[in-house]
Structure formats: C-alpha cells, structure tokens
Length: 83
Image 1 (cartoon, helix red, strand yellow):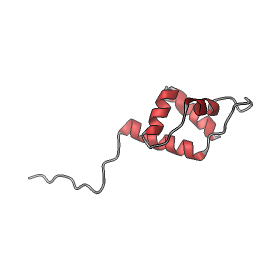
Image 2: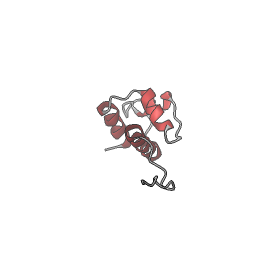
Image 3: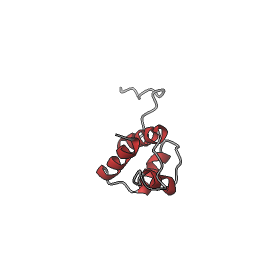
Image 4: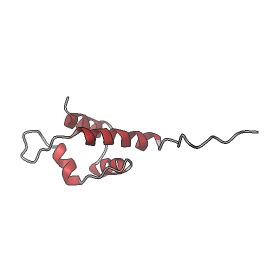
C-alpha cells in the first residue's frame, strides 16, 4: 500500500478535510498547502499527481497523535508532590 493510499484512507476514516490535515501538520511544525495536498489525493494517472513522501506521512501521523490525544507532557518537569 502506498503512502498516498494510507493518507486517503485516513482522511476518509477520520472524516478530515484538507484544512484539518493542514492544521494537524502545523502541530508538528510541518507546512504544506492545499495544492500540495490535492496533488497527493489525486489518482496516480492524473497529470498533477504527486507521490506522498515518507516525511509527509510521518509528520501527519505524529501530528494526528497530538490532535487526538493532546501534546505529551514535558518529561523534564517533575510531578507535584502530594502531602
């Protein structure tokens, strides 16, 4: 299964719009445009098709974790002690 197919299936399964995907990518400081996203969601025989690179998929998955669960707590912070 290609990265493009993974992205398409996640978009449908999670009912995400292009704006949602862009916001998810921003959570991990990865910038993309609607034009670039539409190119990866096109059929692979379309002239404007663009393969989804590993970096985009990896950053999307990392951003999706933050989007669904919230940011990870800083491990350097010590929990407050209870008395």
